[in-house]
Length: 326
Image (cartoon, rainbow, N blue to C red; front, side):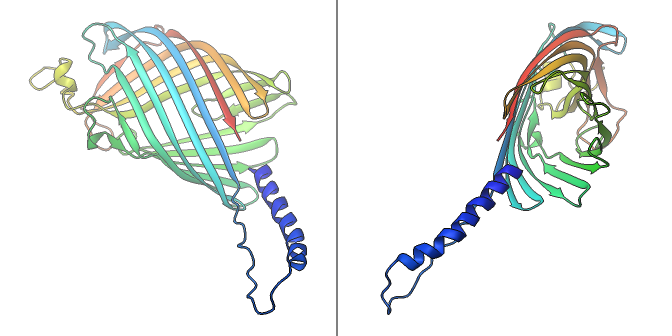
């Protein structure tokens, strides 16, 4: 971002120096109007992307204390954002984000085969002072099991985050997410980043807190945790197709909302194999996964059905991804 801005200023300055000389060297008719060329309005633009995929092995899933069967998960995520810098300290953010959870289910599982989101990113980065940076984003899109997609699958979570630059080695972060379809419509997540030694960084920032060690200028080792999840709409026949429809003794799950959460702990490595591209690989253990299915309404609800695994009965996971910024 700063390099693009500096390059634009340099080009503009060179243009101001050379343009008067060009005009003086051009013969002009005394009666003809002099038309200056239109000014260039170059806007510095930065780009970033992330593409990653992971697999979590089968973990025994329960409804209450009843063990139902094993569930595995293949998670894929892609994100691309373009950021034009409108003025110094203010960037717009436009992009697309897609995430997919594909579950390996046991026979007759009362769970969705797929939970997926495809959404736009509309937001801005703002420098509010020499110590405060803020980001605000809207994520309008489809969040569902992608069976008979309708308007009920539309959602627009709002994410707002701020960073306070306490010092060059210590920053405080606060993020808030607003999603009125979730069982937790407003979630606030504090965090911090602390470089407490020359090669050590504690990045306690949800949803991916890490303890990092810089092995070399291009190689970083880390250990930490990761939270996958989201809020998705189930199709209007989901309950009936899975034995949880009208007239059953269980909750009626047709057209309900599911809050999906998967918690991982592990270790990994990041490799900056070019100045702009980073490869990330990690592996570890998934101790907890939860499907909390509830009606499409705001806030907590007593009418909900939870499918989860116990902490002692998790599964291994592995993940690899690539990210870049230009």
